[in-house]
Length: 196
Image (cartoon, rainbow, N blue to C red; front, top):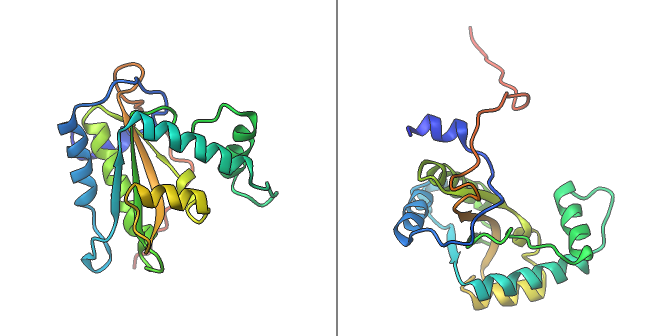
């Protein structure tokens, strides 16, 4: 699969087998992320790769409790509101039971933290598609990065005290044995050409 096909056919995969992908395949995805561009070539995006079922289960419980305790407001981003609602229902698992969770973090106050991390996450999603792995960008830990219980747990797992969580990626083998793929019509992301 060439790069353009990997980009065009990539879709979010949320239903995955519990089987752990091969370590060398996960490492290829991580290396694709590490090769992403960054402002002034700072290379400050920190990747925390979590494959422990016990840790993933603990994080799922903690995230569910934190969302359930949050107040919902009408101006909240719809996915954040949905996370709160599903947590209150009790069965919410923010990482969709994927066997791999890669959390991205960057320096607090660094102006390119989100842009640099987004490049890392995008590279990893494209690489995952090319390697026949499913992936999905998830923001739940980013939304909870300043909650004391989340910070404490994530610092135990390697998050630096000077870092903020910028995003996350779940990774695994799609339920059907391959990632969700397919091209879709572009109805957004308008393009304006400025020519003489």
